[in-house]
Image 1: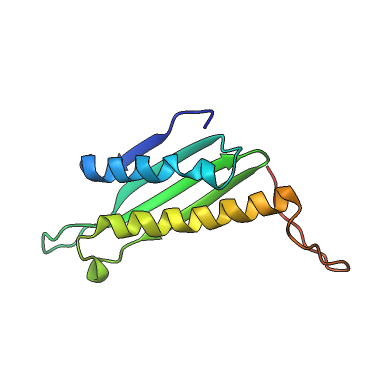
Image 2 (image 1 turned 180 degrees about the vertical axis):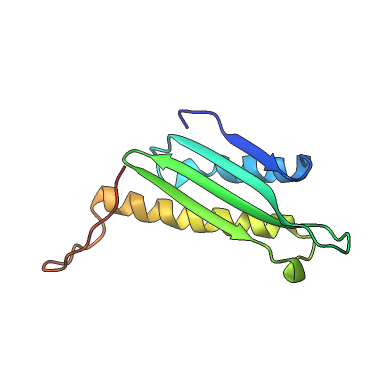
Length: 124
């Protein structure tokens, strides 16, 4: 990665366990696409309940590669939250991993291009 990993906590206290898992998963991203420029992760309280329960979490990951910014988001709904923040982080990074693998295949030319279809990909 050309830029250092950015991890931001919003509305919740910084967690060493969450930070460690994010760092671990972010370090693996370059296995799936060799040109990762930067990665920014925002972990925030999605909403707070009136009953004083632990707030549900939301994660937003942005990864920049040349000509593209890939985004993955996930939110644990309050009634689905089982105090397993790691599963939320893993799901979001799994989505991003698949996006990176797909971009790498396109870059290598491994993806079949269909002729006659008007398919556009967004670029920065």
